[in-house]
Length: 220
Image 1 (tube, helix red, strand yellow):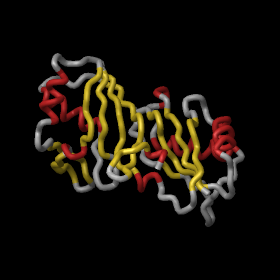
Image 2 (cartoon, rainbow, N blue to C red; image 1 turned 60 degrees about the vertical axis):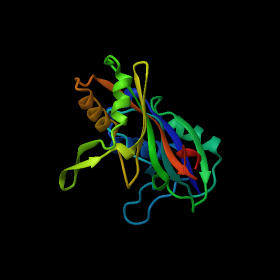
Image 3 (cartoon, rainbow, N blue to C red; image 1 turned 45 degrees about the vertical axis):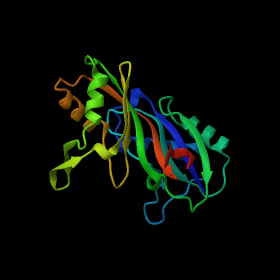
Image 4 (cartoon, rainbow, N blue to C red; image 1 turned 120 degrees about the horizontal axis):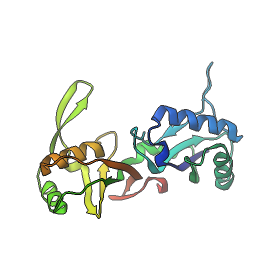
């Protein structure tokens, strides 16, 4: 069986990189006493996978990982045992057992929801956002393996709105297309012709798609 696990990476750990997060989870899983499944060969390791790495500096409210197990464990036991081995800033929120044939979360991932808490909000910024989204194309320069290349991110923006001093975003996140929130903010404030304020960006949820509708990835 496999366990789909939802956890939080709290703001205090936002500067921890993905590899360090993986090592922390692997150590906690070993300490937990859970019946983990290991790889074969001379250097066995836990077959742990994450739906999508978090950028350094970004907290995550409902991050998802997949943990293969040797035999069945109840979700309650899994959460209790793993939680006891993790620090308070990496709480386990839920666990759901799935069949071995269930697709990996990474394969089902299509988008993510973010919020950016802006230190300062320009005047009439919602009007700026409306004008930004009214563009047929939003071309940016993206880093690729072969260097900087122009890319239209407009089809990758599913939602962008301002609530108080917080910018809410739903952006494409998949193997086919990805729009990083930092890149969106850069493009948005260049369009606004104003200096970009400091902002704490948090990933709130990962999304998959079912019958043309976005749904929480953890439920698919």
